[in-house]
Image 1: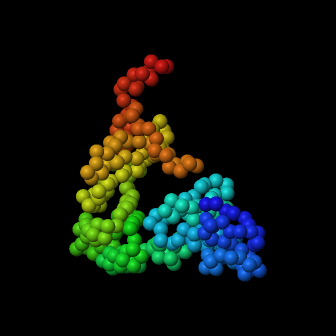
Image 2: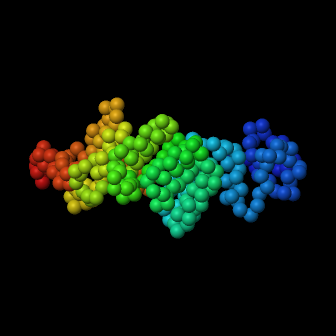
Image 3: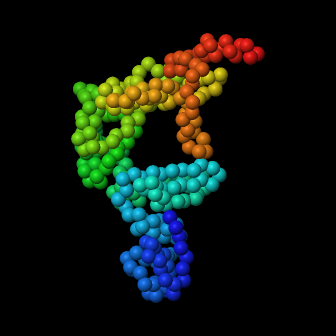
Length: 273
């Protein structure tokens, strides 16, 4: 986005989309009045309004990115274009994110649903109604294991999730489900809830202990119709965000919770000493 500073008497270039000015200078500006913003004492709010007018509010993709540090930066991207940038203290990040998400909810760009407010079948109905209302294309269901406790005794989670999955596919909604495993290391089940047959892709994130150090591993267990990468790779979260590193090629048994260095690698290291 380019910002141009002009005096009221100067000619406005044809590529300008939105003008921010003062109330005193407003009447002297030869421009579409609907695309002129009167600045107030809240510069960030004024800029947010200008960006919203410039790029519109019908976004297919919305991303909230956080740059950590002593003075964190928060950027809002819509359709891969920056629509808002904020610089706040570390303690103000969470309130800011909540305010931004509330603004998106008010514009029907986002909806947060608390499952505690509904029983399981009311929740499914409310999800379907919300998708229709805001024309949602994506859904994140955080914690499928919690749904099991919401279901009546006669109902089973796989059948319930199968119904949810069918509704979402019929409406062409991409869904992401998360589920926490009970084990810190080691893996005996894929999801622990019996819903993996309904999923097109299953990605496993877990801790592995190597040389008395806890590291994070990521692997694609399933990707329907694809010859996907089978390797177990390290994932590192740092100031640059999440980075996928090289595979743990020197070890076997990572998912069992008992990683063992391959014999060939151990042999090479033995002769280095």
